[in-house]
Image (cartoon, rainbow, N blue to C red):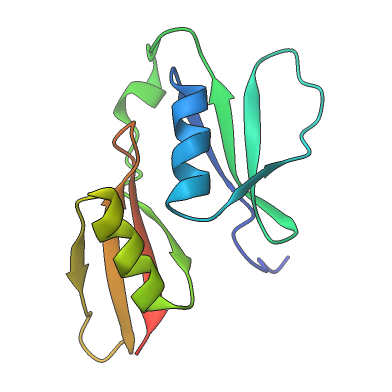
Length: 124
C-alpha cells in the first residue's frame, strides 16, 4: 500500500450553518454533494474534492477518546496570498503568519468558529 494524499478532515459541530458560512467565506470552499446520511452535515469542496466533512451534532458529547484528540491543526496549500491576507483583514479574522526555516512557504494560522486550528500555506 502507498498513501497518495490526505483525503479529508471530519469535524463535528453544533454550529453547522456557521461553519459552512465560514469555510465558504474565509477559505473559499464550496458546499456540495454529500451522501444522504441519517444525520445533518455538509461536505466542503476544494475544486472536485470534498476536503472537509462537517457533521452536525446536537451537543458536545465527547465521552471517550475523542474528548482528548491530539490533532493540533490541519493545513491547505493555496495561491494568491495577497487576496487571502486582504480577506482576513477585511473580515477582522485574527491570524498569525510565519515562515518555517528553509521550507519556502509562508503560513497563515487561523481558527474557525469552533476553534479548529487551520493553516494556509503559500509558496514564497
